[in-house]
Amino acid sequence: MNIQIGRGKTARRAYGIDEIALAPGQRTIDPSLADTSWQIGAIEREIPIIASAMDGVVDVQMAVLLSQLGALGVLNLEGIQTRYADPEPILQRIASVGTHEFVPLMQELYAEPVKPELIEQRIREIKQQGGIAAVSATPAGASKYGSVVAKAGADLFFIQATVVSTAHIAPSEFTSLDLAKFCQEMPMPVVLGNCVTYEVTLSLMKAGAAAVLVGIGPGAACTSRGVLGVGVPQATAIADCAAAREDYYQETGNYVPVIADGGLITGGDICKCIACGADGVMIGSPFARAAEAPGKGFHWGMATPSPVLPRGTRIRVGTTGTCEQILRGPAQLDDGTHNFLGALKTSMGTLGAKDIREMQQVEVVIAPSLLTEGKVYQKAQQLGMGK
Image 1 (cartoon, rainbow, N blue to C red):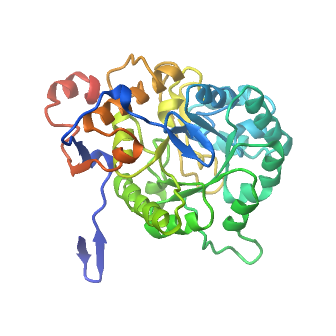
Image 2 (cartoon, rainbow, N blue to C red):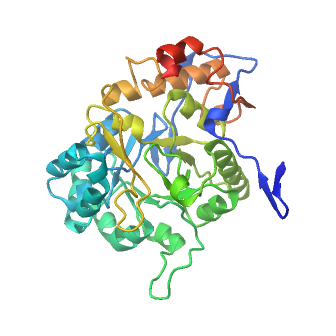
Image 3 (tube, rainbow, N blue to C red):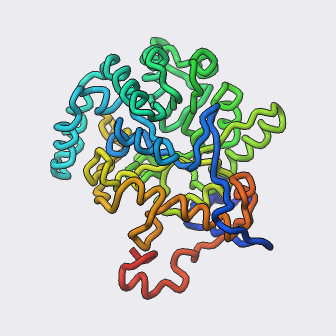
C-alpha cells in the first residue's frame, strides 16, 4: 500500500525486525528434530550464521573457531589483518583511544597499505588450522586482489559494499568491476552484496552470485542510514529479496541463498529474519562480545576509517562469554544474546518448522508492541528484554 507523503510523492510502508512477530501454526516439533543446515556453493554448515567481515569481529583464530563450531567467519581483506604483520598492537591502540580521537586514529591506521603477501598468509593460516577460509573485499579490492585470493585458495569470496549493483557507473578514468565475469572466473563461490531490492537481487543472481547479502545500514556500528539517509528496514528488505530468489529458482532451477546482514542482536532477530525469507544471517556485534574476538570488547564498522566520509563508529559491546556460549550455549545471559543455535531450534520447534525452507513459510504478523507488551518489570529492573 502506497502512502502519500505530499503532492507528487508516495511511499511504500516498510517494516523492521522489531515490528513483526512469528505466529505458531497447527503443529509443533521437538527442537532436536529441527534441521538448521544450509549451503553456499558446495560448502554446507550446520548453523546458518556468519560472523561479519569486521576487524573487531573476525581474525584468523575466530575464523577457525567459528568453522569448528559449525558456523562461518569472514575475514576483511582490507582491514588491520592484511595491513599489519602483527595486528595486536594496532588493535590495542584502537581499544584504548578516547572517543574524540577515535576517527582520526582509524584514518591514520587504515592509511597503511594492504599487503598482498599478508592476504595469502592469512588465508593459508586459516586453512592450515582446518578452518573455512571465507574472505571479503570491496569491489575495488576484489578487482585488485582477486588473483591473490584465487592463488591462496580461499574457500569463499564475499564482495561487499554499502550498495552493490551490476549497473555501477564509474568515472571515465576507472573501470567498473564486471561482477558476472568475476564470478565466472574465480575458482570459488562468490557472494555479492549488499542490496535491499527485488530488482538488484535478481540482477546479482543472474550475474552468478553464490549468495546475496541483504541490508543497508542496520548494523550496530554503522551510521550509513544517518549519514546518507539510505536503507530499507530489514523485514521488508529480506522479503523483497527472497521473492527474487524464488522467482530466479523457478526460472532457472538454481537456488541462491539470501543472507540477512546487519542489525541482528538476539536469537529472536535471527528467527524472524529466516521467517521473512532469509536462508542465513550475518552478524557482527554479538560476536564482537566473545572473549576470543579481536576487538577487545569494541566493535566498529567497515566504513569507519574512510578518509573523507566515515560512516561507522566504534561502540563498546563488552565481553559476555565465549564464542561457543554465544553460538551454541549454554546461555549465561537472559536477553537472547547467547545460544543462537538453541534459540533457532526452539523457535522452529514451536512453529512446527522442520527445516529452514519450512521456517521461511511460517506466519508473520505486524506486532509493534512485541518487545514491550507485558514487560514493565523487565524494563524497570533492566532485566531480560528490558536491558
